Amino acid sequence: MEIKQLFEYFQERTPAILGSENFTKFAVLLPLVEKEGDIHVLFEVRSHKMRRQPGEVCFPGGKCDPEDEDERFTAIRETAEELGVIPSDIHHTFPLDFMLSPFGTIIFPFVGALPTSQLNTNPEEVEEVFTVPLDYLLKAVPDCHSINFKVVPEEGFPFDLIIGGKDYNWQARPMDEYFYFYEDRIIWGLTARILKHFLDIVKKSGVFCEPPPPLDKSKK
Image 1 (cartoon, rainbow, N blue to C red):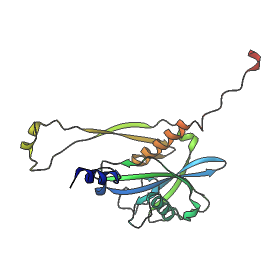
Image 2 (image 1 turned 120 degrees about the vertical axis):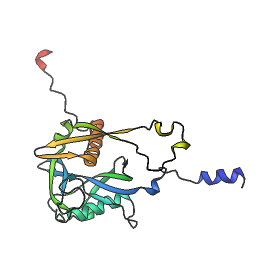
Image 3 (image 1 turned 90 degrees about the vertical axis):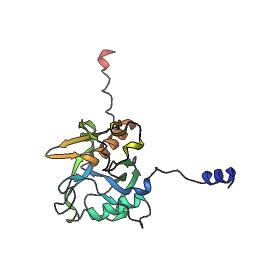
Image 4 (image 1 turned 120 degrees about the horizontal axis):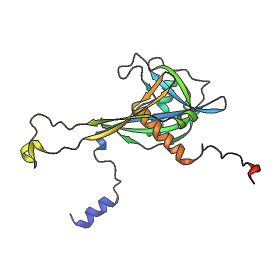
């Protein structure tokens, strides 16, 4: 093989995340609804029948199936299945930044709008739903606490092959965990991380900035 042939191959190659073929892909939707003229964020409470994380607050979503067209399709499909809405009623879906978790998953979050009057939740997955005013969330300051992931080599790890051996200075990876509070609800974990990311984007846009106070003409 000539070097020219090698470079021709790389010209046609689309880069991805190294090792992403070993990651499980999930897609979730951050649902926006209108209530009494205001925008609310809709949350689910996971059914107590669920094997993983029963009773926790989350957004609708799930694992990407091989037959799904793309991650957006997955987010809409899962939302429709969990909330009992027609997929075509979920509109204005836009992608947020995707996330690599330390647990071998890639999460693709989306934001979209849906009607609340037609919800027919799946009791096998959803215990209940509730909404929080977007204005409240934009003003809320979440609690933030850090957790650290420690490297623990498996038994039989070849320390003799690396400089420093068993005293090698492995880097510990910190991760922030956010906690939002609304009435008796606690929103944390992946859901809070996606929520904060969305709120940061909205704040940066300036769309929801409070208008300046009226001019006091008496001071002219």
